[in-house]
Image 1 (tube, one colour):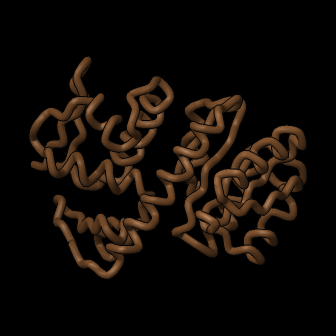
Image 2 (tube, rainbow, N blue to C red):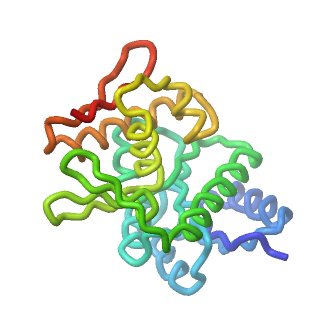
Amino acid sequence: MSKAKILYVEDEIFLAKIVRESLESRGYTIILETDGGKAVEQYKTARPDICVLDIMLPNKDGFSIAEEIRNMDTDTPIIFLTAKIQTTDLVKGFSMGGNDYIRKPFSMEELIVRIENALRQRNGLKNQSDQKEDTKIGAFTFNPHRQTLNSNGQERKLSFRESELLRLLYENRDRVIDRRDILNVLWGSDSFFNSRTLDVYITKLRGYLKTDPSLEIITVKGIGYRFVTG
């Protein structure tokens, strides 16, 4: 029985064939597209459980594909594949609705772990979707299950990891939380790449919360963070 349906967009034919065959051997159904310009139509037709998108593609890049998908669907996980990762790439990818990044070259085991993790997170959120759990954080109302942050009648939709990071900081508010603990809880690893990704998320959360001066995410050098709530 198929585990999940994956839209895989990759223009390196040799790599795409290896990855497709490896994933199919593990029970996944793969919709392979090599042309970025056709990826969104494939998405509409196939309605996959998860999307794995190379960033550098002919006719339309992975960021643009993700943005179009997110305009139709806020739940399906999106994993980016890229040969180079700069902080600006991370910020752009997450702002377009990406859930995760994998640096090329990658192992199949890493890809499978990332796919399964993203699917578990998505399914966990679906199971909780009917729950109401509004939390007041300063001038904001935060709902971790719906992944929303509201203030003055304006709602911001958070990504899964933005929501989980804010929840973790709030639950440990006014205490120092070790950076490594955050990395291991949210990413399962305190690798350099995940550490850089955490930096991006901290910057984004600070930007979201800056309208309330009573809220501050303080960097405790060499240790981690303290979320001050006034």
